[in-house]
Length: 476
Image (cartoon, rainbow, N blue to C red; front, top):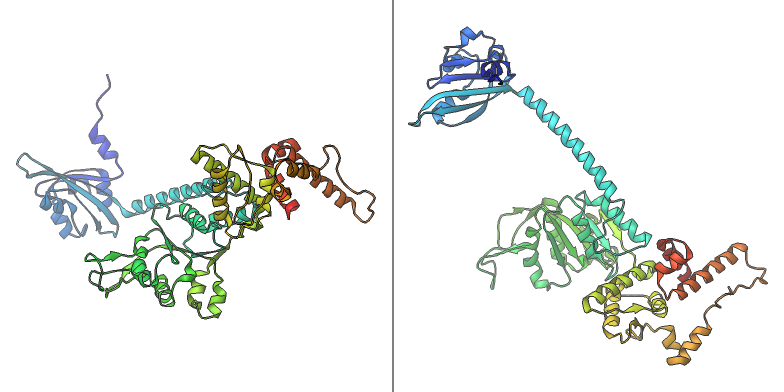
């Protein structure tokens, strides 16, 4: 049978000071730590009153007396005769009538607290470092969410956004309409330290000019005729602790550009009709398909706001400059709409060729709409591109319909077993011969695989990413 622990010995061994007083503050029990702290013997302390010790200057205040007066737990800091700062906590024990019976007080000096804080900070710094390492390793493979790409250009953009997402610097995204600026803004927010805060998306071109100020800044009740009786919180205010994304920033009127600049510099918003400002804290991301620098030169955009926004500029290349992305995006949209509408459409080689030859002025947005149209209107399992906005026609349709067109197209294909290279032309180099042979071989295998890049890559014996890059060079 185990012996019961000797609680007196445990208290005596404690590094923290421990003493008990009665309801009047007379000390009943002390441990050696108290004696060391006050430089007094146990005999001097037991029976002494804490009020008298304060008056004698052993320490400058008593949490014990505070706890007796309040009849509840009390903590505070006091200074001893030797100049040490002590954190002390006193807990009163009440009898059945609610009166103080005894008070238990324990304390330790602030140097120990500082030591603990330092130790905790070091642990937190270590944890932060480990998290950063995990984050780095996790982003070695970029979590793209809804951003579909395979091109090196887009890979570089996402790596850059990963780097700057953790800071609060202003980002401006330059790119044509439909290049996915909104997706990149959301991606940046999701990977930022503000990810748990709101993401407020504002299209400056979609809000009428006479409503834009009230939408962005909000207004007080009765601020103007027709104003809501409750007033309105502005979108900038809603973005507090999160990210504000101002798309089409080039459409912002000049007078609101000045107000936006003031908000960015003061971190304060003033609602319409208000005489006081409200503090706000948001990260700003803007986007435009306009040439802001040219607008500055033409006095249509404030130069001071331009420089304030242009901290981290990101240029998004148009889809026509990313041929490999056309293929993966088209396949992504095809899968998406096949699932949505319950179809099983596929692309032919001729369709893929037509997609790659088109310039895509509307970029990914236009491509998405085209693929949706093809899936819905396709009348056979293999989706054929007939005519899209008068711009895209498959080679087979250009050459003629039916069997005649099919024969003409087949006649232009490479021979099944022969690579067509003129070896009698001594004006070409060996490198050019090899490049031409590779080109013809890739196109022949791709044709055999009916345009399926994954199957073609497996047959050739290379990764599909490499094949996409080779196709881009071939098509350019």
